[in-house]
Amino acid sequence: MNRKKKINQILKSRMKKVKQNSNKPKYISKAEREKMALAEQEAAQTAEQSVEQAAEQPTQEPAVEAEKTEA
Image 1 (tube, one colour):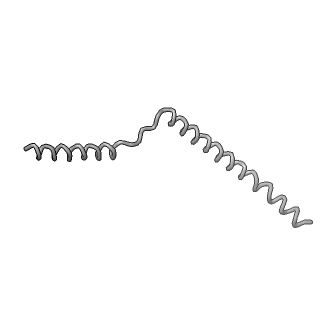
Image 2: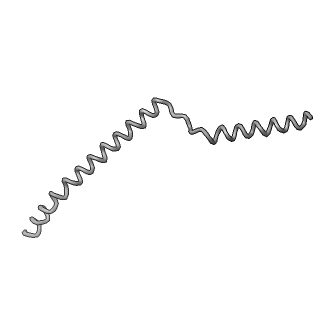
């Protein structure tokens, strides 16, 4: 009886470890979450700025091309 009990105990402990690791996502501290949120905000701002700059540049380029063709 002891042998069966010991084997069952070992198997149950292994199953608990497997379940414990697979169900829970990795813990992220509050400070890390804030850093990630700031980084996302900065990335969004830089993306918006680059889009605005890209929108401004094409209006200037055709005028420059027109001057080149006239000269």
